[in-house]
Length: 285
Length: 287
Image (cartoon, rainbow over all chains, first blue to last red):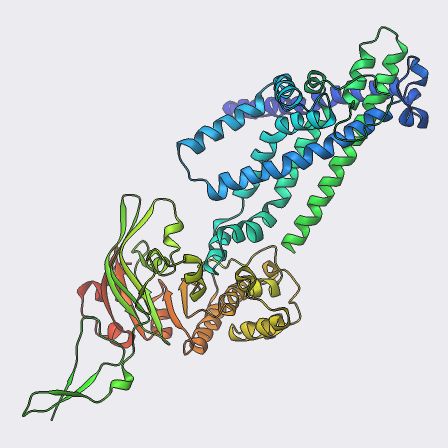
């Protein structure tokens, strides 16, 4: 009897601990958000969104940051998604299992854990210097693409693996080639999962500042990028710049900038989730 | 006058009748037109998964426009055998085979044979219904033709209707052609997979326990459908249901532990099996 009581108490304690583990980070996150919005709300205005940087905190805007982030994400996705999905298709559908596959697998996980600053240094060496792209939007996007590639590949591989072999065999038995099976059976089914990977990748890329600072994104940009070769800035760098200034007023700008970044991120993620839900709906019924 | 039935180790469904002249001792074939030519000949066919041998020196002829059933306990190699007939066996990592499979006397494993083209001639229906979940009923039927690039737009409706009628599914789905194939019941899905296979107009249809995931009514429908189409195709059906083999097939082959134990006309094999092991299996002493 008393043993059973002990068990019950132990279980309750465990559940309570789990609950704390869930609630605590959420509360902290919420406090941070509230604090950020509190600080930045006063600065959020049309003038702030559509303005250019300025020496005066009250006149500074973040349009170049918004546009720069937007362009960077588009180019990064355009580079990373085809290469990442292609690599995943090769590894899952074409490549043979063996030592080389294991080696690649281990290193993909390792790459996903490499600090982003390292990617920045690599981008500086390869894209900016050797390939002569300069401190341009393209060099930044290429660096970001490298950074998110492991995420895209891993998520795409997981998605491709969930497609049952019975469907592949069904298509082969109809006289399909490997490419036709991949294109018409595997990829359509894996697409929602691949999209999830794309969301993760884009979310990661949009919040990164460190590698872009190394590659040479500017902090004080009074123009919008005109081409892939233009200098650029992105939201996180703008925020970083404001935070590191001595004047107190710029802190409010940084908070407001963070709010804008967060809203853009949430909008993009909801769009992708909505798209995925739509596709999954069509798939099952 | 002596009438003797020519006996081969591989006796075809209707054997050759030979009239032997008692004076000269020479034979004269009188029923030649009835001699079926095997569609598929397996000769000394062995198969492995890694180091494990799953088929041992199978010699089996399969005749056109009839149903050949392959029976045997689980793990006897019957599925592997038919997967060697459309070269799906080789898709499994570590799979290997030896010996020959001849389709119309051509070695299907010869280097110049493209497995993709072979599979368009030798279709297959699987144990678990596997309609393509991203495709509608109609697209599922057309999938094979689309994959082959043989589909002409103006023929599509006609092909869909013909294949679905052949698979005895048309009346049930004719108003739901644009709905997803995965929304049908299990038995309907399996008939959809049969329609998909027939739409490519194969010469041989392999069926790997096509009813094992279905209820008795759906099973009866599939069996009736096999009866309907067997005059146009060469059908090989793997089943662990002996009654089903007895109902649908003209010839039955009994496999045990990777070996072909006995093959013959279904009625003969079931009533008077020649091998002790066949008899034991049929009477339920093991299985």
